[in-house]
Length: 338
Image (tube, rainbow, N blue to C red; front, side, top):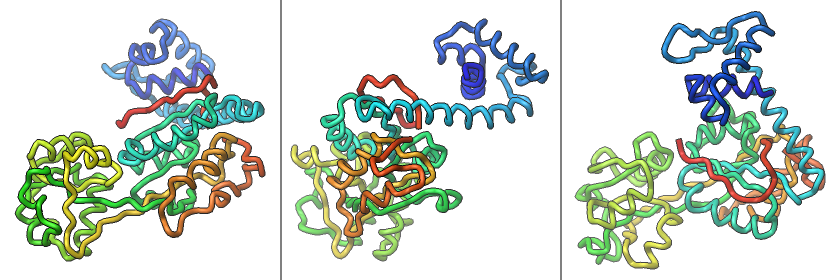
């Protein structure tokens, strides 16, 4: 297992030294483990001719199987942790950017009040990467705002969970902030601040605006930023207008530093979905989260029945177990967006 973890770290980091730093071991120890592995298999695993450590064909093959072995071992460790009921264990929740930043922390806070000894990891990534994490068993469940990749739609269970309203925000001192509603034509006069054109929220907004007979190509995108917080700060400073989820601006509305400008006859909403892999063993921690926390935050009219997420061949009536091994001493770990 240690040799496989080292192989994976070198492939990820691109060098023996960075892999050693990541694993908190010495570089000679990493090199020795790789040499021993190559002797056992009688094949070279890395092409050492270049500046970057490149896997050979045999190295790629071993890494492919090695990642599956590591995941299976992690699942086994977590299954054993579950034997202690919920006195420990790990819950791994995935989310896309907005839900991971503004919705999931409240949900995890509620869960931790009830189960303080369970370690919770929150992984915030793109919808695509999050979906693959659930499919590969690296994430127990996730809440996303975009569509599951086509190649995973038969693998994952996707259920509607909540409605997310997306609002047009302006600085409070903007002239249009005094109007009760604004007209569609007013949008073409504004300067917009937005996320990257490939982001899920941007695509949803463009789609809904187009359905409302608004020509998104005529909107003036003044700048593109990579975070909702940066966009909110830019709007507050008077640099432009933006569309954001209302869950992201609750504090700013209370402080009266941002203004929501309703657009006449246009509502922008998207559906947040819960995704799980029904073929993975469901941990007691994830079963408790599904039963006790998810229903408290659901707002979709066709909201999920928690039991639908728990009825799979690898889940018992008590919600026994699923994925990654960590010391079960409580706490929350957050993986940054990459």
